[in-house]
Length: 326
Picture 1 (cartoon, one colour):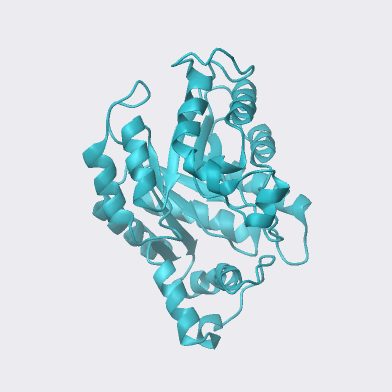
Picture 2 (tube, rainbow, N blue to C red):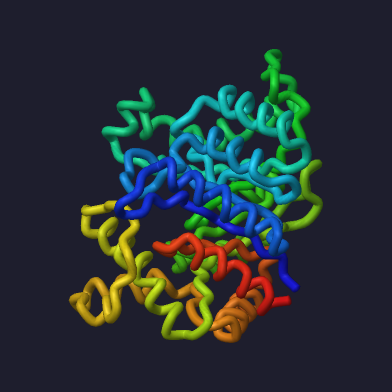
Protein backbone atom coordinates (compact mmCIF):
# COMPACT_ATOMS: atom_id res chain seq x y z
CA UNK A 1 0.00 0.00 0.00
CA UNK A 2 1.29 3.46 -0.90
CA UNK A 3 1.97 5.67 2.16
CA UNK A 4 -0.70 8.33 2.74
CA UNK A 5 -0.28 11.71 4.40
CA UNK A 6 -2.57 14.68 5.14
CA UNK A 7 -2.37 18.32 4.06
CA UNK A 8 -4.51 20.65 6.18
CA UNK A 9 -5.19 24.32 5.46
CA UNK A 10 -6.62 24.86 8.98
CA UNK A 11 -9.88 26.17 7.49
CA UNK A 12 -11.96 28.70 9.41
CA UNK A 13 -15.62 27.80 9.06
CA UNK A 14 -18.42 30.31 8.57
CA UNK A 15 -19.77 31.21 12.00
CA UNK A 16 -16.52 30.27 13.76
CA UNK A 17 -13.05 31.73 14.30
CA UNK A 18 -9.37 30.75 14.39
CA UNK A 19 -9.64 29.17 17.86
CA UNK A 20 -12.11 26.59 16.60
CA UNK A 21 -10.07 26.04 13.41
CA UNK A 22 -6.93 25.27 15.42
CA UNK A 23 -8.83 22.91 17.70
CA UNK A 24 -10.28 21.18 14.63
CA UNK A 25 -6.77 20.81 13.16
CA UNK A 26 -5.47 19.14 16.31
CA UNK A 27 -8.37 16.68 16.35
CA UNK A 28 -7.85 15.94 12.65
CA UNK A 29 -4.15 15.24 13.28
CA UNK A 30 -5.06 12.87 16.09
CA UNK A 31 -7.47 11.10 13.74
CA UNK A 32 -4.80 10.85 11.03
CA UNK A 33 -2.28 9.45 13.51
CA UNK A 34 -4.73 6.82 14.75
CA UNK A 35 -5.68 5.83 11.19
CA UNK A 36 -2.06 5.30 10.17
CA UNK A 37 -1.21 8.34 8.03
CA UNK A 38 2.51 9.06 7.73
CA UNK A 39 2.61 12.86 7.85
CA UNK A 40 0.40 15.80 8.77
CA UNK A 41 1.36 19.00 6.97
CA UNK A 42 0.10 22.56 7.37
CA UNK A 43 0.30 25.22 4.63
CA UNK A 44 1.32 28.85 5.05
CA UNK A 45 -1.21 31.44 3.85
CA UNK A 46 -1.57 35.05 4.97
CA UNK A 47 -4.43 37.54 5.48
CA UNK A 48 -7.09 35.06 4.40
CA UNK A 49 -10.19 35.08 6.58
CA UNK A 50 -10.82 31.39 5.92
CA UNK A 51 -7.35 30.01 6.74
CA UNK A 52 -5.73 29.99 10.19
CA UNK A 53 -2.33 28.46 9.38
CA UNK A 54 -0.34 31.65 8.74
CA UNK A 55 1.96 31.24 11.77
CA UNK A 56 2.86 27.77 10.54
CA UNK A 57 5.61 26.95 13.02
CA UNK A 58 3.35 27.86 15.95
CA UNK A 59 0.52 25.75 14.52
CA UNK A 60 2.90 22.80 14.18
CA UNK A 61 3.86 23.08 17.84
CA UNK A 62 0.16 22.90 18.66
CA UNK A 63 -0.26 19.84 16.42
CA UNK A 64 2.85 18.22 17.87
CA UNK A 65 1.53 18.55 21.40
CA UNK A 66 -1.75 16.90 20.36
CA UNK A 67 -0.02 13.89 18.74
CA UNK A 68 2.82 11.52 19.56
CA UNK A 69 4.02 9.54 16.52
CA UNK A 70 2.86 11.05 13.21
CA UNK A 71 5.39 13.20 11.36
CA UNK A 72 4.37 16.88 11.28
CA UNK A 73 5.55 19.57 8.95
CA UNK A 74 5.00 22.43 6.56
CA UNK A 75 3.39 21.99 3.21
CA UNK A 76 4.86 24.47 2.99
CA UNK A 77 6.82 27.31 4.43
CA UNK A 78 6.94 29.98 1.72
CA UNK A 79 10.63 30.79 1.99
CA UNK A 80 10.50 34.14 0.11
CA UNK A 81 8.55 35.46 3.11
CA UNK A 82 11.28 34.57 5.60
CA UNK A 83 14.90 34.81 6.59
CA UNK A 84 16.49 31.32 6.33
CA UNK A 85 18.17 31.74 9.72
CA UNK A 86 14.82 32.33 11.44
CA UNK A 87 13.30 29.23 9.78
CA UNK A 88 16.32 27.18 10.89
CA UNK A 89 15.72 28.30 14.46
CA UNK A 90 11.98 27.65 14.30
CA UNK A 91 12.27 24.15 12.85
CA UNK A 92 15.27 23.37 15.03
CA UNK A 93 13.06 24.22 17.98
CA UNK A 94 10.28 21.98 16.64
CA UNK A 95 12.79 19.14 16.25
CA UNK A 96 13.94 19.63 19.85
CA UNK A 97 10.33 19.47 21.01
CA UNK A 98 9.27 16.56 18.77
CA UNK A 99 12.49 14.74 17.79
CA UNK A 100 12.45 12.66 14.64
CA UNK A 101 9.03 13.91 13.56
CA UNK A 102 9.65 17.20 11.73
CA UNK A 103 9.35 17.84 7.99
CA UNK A 104 10.24 21.17 6.41
CA UNK A 105 8.52 21.60 3.05
CA UNK A 106 9.62 24.75 1.23
CA UNK A 107 7.78 26.65 -1.48
CA UNK A 108 8.89 29.47 -3.78
CA UNK A 109 5.52 31.22 -4.09
CA UNK A 110 4.94 33.93 -1.48
CA UNK A 111 1.42 32.78 -0.62
CA UNK A 112 0.50 36.44 -0.37
CA UNK A 113 -0.03 39.59 -2.42
CA UNK A 114 2.18 42.69 -2.49
CA UNK A 115 0.40 44.25 0.50
CA UNK A 116 1.39 41.25 2.60
CA UNK A 117 4.91 41.43 1.20
CA UNK A 118 5.14 44.99 2.43
CA UNK A 119 3.78 43.99 5.82
CA UNK A 120 6.41 41.23 6.00
CA UNK A 121 9.11 43.75 4.95
CA UNK A 122 10.07 41.58 1.98
CA UNK A 123 11.04 42.47 -1.60
CA UNK A 124 9.35 39.52 -3.26
CA UNK A 125 10.83 40.16 -6.70
CA UNK A 126 14.33 39.92 -5.30
CA UNK A 127 13.89 37.13 -2.76
CA UNK A 128 12.09 34.90 -5.26
CA UNK A 129 15.16 35.12 -7.48
CA UNK A 130 17.30 34.15 -4.48
CA UNK A 131 15.17 31.13 -3.59
CA UNK A 132 17.74 28.48 -4.61
CA UNK A 133 20.46 30.26 -2.65
CA UNK A 134 18.18 30.57 0.39
CA UNK A 135 17.35 26.84 0.26
CA UNK A 136 21.05 25.96 0.20
CA UNK A 137 21.71 28.38 3.06
CA UNK A 138 18.87 26.96 5.14
CA UNK A 139 20.07 23.40 4.60
CA UNK A 140 23.60 24.44 5.59
CA UNK A 141 22.31 26.04 8.79
CA UNK A 142 20.67 22.74 9.73
CA UNK A 143 23.40 20.34 8.60
CA UNK A 144 26.62 22.38 8.89
CA UNK A 145 27.51 21.56 5.26
CA UNK A 146 29.00 23.90 4.23
CA UNK A 147 29.97 25.66 7.43
CA UNK A 148 28.22 29.05 7.51
CA UNK A 149 30.45 30.39 10.28
CA UNK A 150 27.31 30.99 12.35
CA UNK A 151 25.17 28.31 13.97
CA UNK A 152 21.46 28.51 14.56
CA UNK A 153 20.58 27.34 18.07
CA UNK A 154 18.29 25.45 18.03
CA UNK A 155 18.73 24.45 14.41
CA UNK A 156 22.24 23.17 13.85
CA UNK A 157 22.25 19.38 13.88
CA UNK A 158 18.44 19.12 13.93
CA UNK A 159 17.13 16.00 12.19
CA UNK A 160 14.67 17.88 10.01
CA UNK A 161 13.54 16.22 6.78
CA UNK A 162 13.66 18.94 4.11
CA UNK A 163 11.37 18.83 1.05
CA UNK A 164 10.85 21.12 -1.92
CA UNK A 165 7.31 21.79 -3.11
CA UNK A 166 6.23 22.92 -6.52
CA UNK A 167 3.60 23.24 -9.22
CA UNK A 168 6.00 23.89 -12.11
CA UNK A 169 9.22 22.51 -13.57
CA UNK A 170 11.37 24.89 -11.51
CA UNK A 171 10.79 23.06 -8.25
CA UNK A 172 11.37 19.70 -9.92
CA UNK A 173 14.70 20.85 -11.34
CA UNK A 174 15.89 22.38 -8.06
CA UNK A 175 14.83 19.35 -5.99
CA UNK A 176 16.72 17.08 -8.37
CA UNK A 177 19.84 19.26 -8.35
CA UNK A 178 19.93 19.37 -4.54
CA UNK A 179 18.99 15.71 -4.03
CA UNK A 180 15.85 16.48 -2.02
CA UNK A 181 12.43 14.82 -1.91
CA UNK A 182 9.84 16.60 -4.04
CA UNK A 183 6.11 17.18 -3.54
CA UNK A 184 3.94 18.34 -6.45
CA UNK A 185 0.87 20.50 -5.77
CA UNK A 186 -1.40 18.70 -8.22
CA UNK A 187 -4.40 19.21 -5.94
CA UNK A 188 -4.74 22.73 -7.36
CA UNK A 189 -2.23 22.88 -10.28
CA UNK A 190 -2.41 19.55 -12.15
CA UNK A 191 -1.17 20.60 -15.59
CA UNK A 192 2.56 19.89 -15.27
CA UNK A 193 2.36 16.92 -12.89
CA UNK A 194 3.66 14.20 -15.22
CA UNK A 195 6.28 16.40 -16.86
CA UNK A 196 7.61 17.65 -13.53
CA UNK A 197 7.97 14.14 -12.13
CA UNK A 198 9.78 13.02 -15.28
CA UNK A 199 12.23 15.93 -15.05
CA UNK A 200 12.77 15.32 -11.34
CA UNK A 201 13.55 11.63 -11.75
CA UNK A 202 15.67 12.02 -14.88
CA UNK A 203 17.90 14.80 -13.50
CA UNK A 204 18.09 13.70 -9.84
CA UNK A 205 21.50 13.82 -8.18
CA UNK A 206 22.01 11.77 -4.99
CA UNK A 207 22.81 13.71 -1.82
CA UNK A 208 23.66 12.87 1.80
CA UNK A 209 19.93 13.27 2.53
CA UNK A 210 18.58 11.08 -0.29
CA UNK A 211 20.17 8.45 -2.54
CA UNK A 212 17.33 8.19 -5.09
CA UNK A 213 14.31 10.27 -6.19
CA UNK A 214 11.36 10.39 -3.80
CA UNK A 215 8.17 12.04 -5.06
CA UNK A 216 4.90 12.87 -3.34
CA UNK A 217 1.71 13.73 -5.24
CA UNK A 218 -1.06 15.86 -3.72
CA UNK A 219 -4.72 14.94 -4.32
CA UNK A 220 -8.08 16.32 -3.31
CA UNK A 221 -9.71 13.47 -1.41
CA UNK A 222 -13.15 13.40 0.18
CA UNK A 223 -14.57 9.99 1.02
CA UNK A 224 -18.07 9.39 2.38
CA UNK A 225 -20.59 6.57 2.61
CA UNK A 226 -21.81 7.27 -0.94
CA UNK A 227 -20.70 9.13 -4.05
CA UNK A 228 -23.64 11.50 -3.61
CA UNK A 229 -22.75 12.39 -0.03
CA UNK A 230 -19.11 13.01 -0.95
CA UNK A 231 -20.14 15.26 -3.85
CA UNK A 232 -22.31 17.30 -1.48
CA UNK A 233 -19.51 17.62 1.08
CA UNK A 234 -17.17 18.75 -1.70
CA UNK A 235 -19.34 21.80 -2.46
CA UNK A 236 -17.85 23.60 0.56
CA UNK A 237 -14.41 23.29 -1.01
CA UNK A 238 -15.84 24.22 -4.42
CA UNK A 239 -17.31 27.43 -3.01
CA UNK A 240 -13.98 28.36 -1.44
CA UNK A 241 -12.10 27.90 -4.68
CA UNK A 242 -14.65 29.82 -6.76
CA UNK A 243 -14.52 32.63 -4.20
CA UNK A 244 -10.73 32.69 -4.29
CA UNK A 245 -10.54 32.74 -8.08
CA UNK A 246 -13.20 35.46 -8.31
CA UNK A 247 -11.34 37.69 -5.84
CA UNK A 248 -13.81 37.13 -3.03
CA UNK A 249 -12.26 34.63 -0.61
CA UNK A 250 -13.92 34.02 2.70
CA UNK A 251 -14.59 31.46 5.39
CA UNK A 252 -15.45 27.85 4.58
CA UNK A 253 -19.17 27.66 3.83
CA UNK A 254 -21.70 24.88 4.49
CA UNK A 255 -22.38 22.48 1.60
CA UNK A 256 -25.01 23.48 -0.95
CA UNK A 257 -27.05 20.82 -2.79
CA UNK A 258 -26.73 21.21 -6.55
CA UNK A 259 -24.08 23.93 -6.20
CA UNK A 260 -22.23 23.11 -9.40
CA UNK A 261 -25.45 23.33 -11.40
CA UNK A 262 -25.73 27.00 -10.35
CA UNK A 263 -22.32 27.96 -11.76
CA UNK A 264 -21.71 29.64 -15.12
CA UNK A 265 -19.87 27.45 -17.64
CA UNK A 266 -16.55 29.25 -17.16
CA UNK A 267 -16.55 28.69 -13.38
CA UNK A 268 -17.61 25.07 -13.77
CA UNK A 269 -14.87 24.45 -16.33
CA UNK A 270 -12.32 26.02 -14.00
CA UNK A 271 -13.39 23.74 -11.15
CA UNK A 272 -13.36 20.63 -13.32
CA UNK A 273 -9.91 21.46 -14.63
CA UNK A 274 -8.46 22.18 -11.21
CA UNK A 275 -9.97 19.01 -9.70
CA UNK A 276 -8.37 16.63 -12.22
CA UNK A 277 -6.22 14.98 -9.54
CA UNK A 278 -9.01 14.19 -7.11
CA UNK A 279 -10.82 11.32 -5.45
CA UNK A 280 -14.35 12.29 -4.41
CA UNK A 281 -16.87 9.58 -3.58
CA UNK A 282 -17.50 6.39 -1.68
CA UNK A 283 -14.62 4.41 -0.21
CA UNK A 284 -14.49 2.21 -3.32
CA UNK A 285 -14.56 5.21 -5.67
CA UNK A 286 -11.79 6.93 -3.73
CA UNK A 287 -9.61 3.83 -3.55
CA UNK A 288 -9.90 3.33 -7.31
CA UNK A 289 -9.05 6.97 -8.08
CA UNK A 290 -6.03 7.00 -5.77
CA UNK A 291 -4.78 3.73 -7.24
CA UNK A 292 -5.03 5.15 -10.77
CA UNK A 293 -3.05 8.27 -9.83
CA UNK A 294 -0.46 6.17 -8.01
CA UNK A 295 -0.05 3.91 -11.06
CA UNK A 296 0.08 6.83 -13.47
CA UNK A 297 2.65 8.85 -11.53
CA UNK A 298 4.60 6.05 -9.80
CA UNK A 299 4.45 8.29 -6.72
CA UNK A 300 6.29 7.20 -3.59
CA UNK A 301 3.65 8.85 -1.40
CA UNK A 302 0.22 10.49 -1.74
CA UNK A 303 -0.79 13.47 0.38
CA UNK A 304 -4.53 14.12 0.64
CA UNK A 305 -6.08 17.57 0.85
CA UNK A 306 -9.70 18.67 1.01
CA UNK A 307 -11.85 20.63 3.45
CA UNK A 308 -15.34 19.85 4.70
CA UNK A 309 -17.58 22.20 6.67
CA UNK A 310 -18.24 19.54 9.29
CA UNK A 311 -14.89 18.59 10.88
CA UNK A 312 -16.27 15.14 11.71
CA UNK A 313 -16.85 14.53 7.99
CA UNK A 314 -13.18 15.20 7.26
CA UNK A 315 -12.15 12.78 10.00
CA UNK A 316 -14.56 10.20 8.60
CA UNK A 317 -13.09 10.79 5.15
CA UNK A 318 -9.57 10.05 6.40
CA UNK A 319 -10.73 6.87 8.12
CA UNK A 320 -12.66 5.60 5.08
CA UNK A 321 -9.78 6.38 2.73
CA UNK A 322 -7.20 4.54 4.78
CA UNK A 323 -9.44 1.51 5.29
CA UNK A 324 -10.32 1.36 1.60
CA UNK A 325 -6.68 1.37 0.50
CA UNK A 326 -5.59 -1.07 3.18
